Length: 18
Image 1 (cartoon, rainbow, N blue to C red):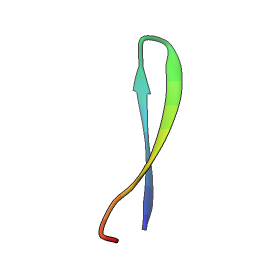
Image 2: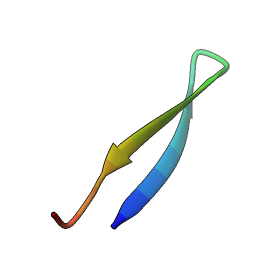
Image 3: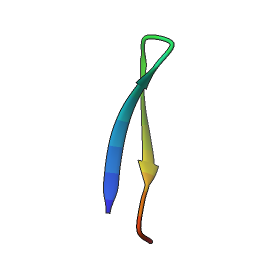
Image 4: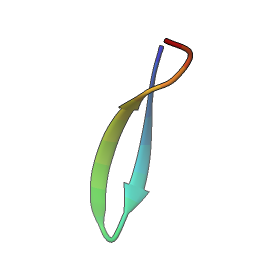
């Protein structure tokens, strides 16, 4: 699945549970 996190004011998308 996909998840979103906010880091340094930027939105980073990363895959989780490949």
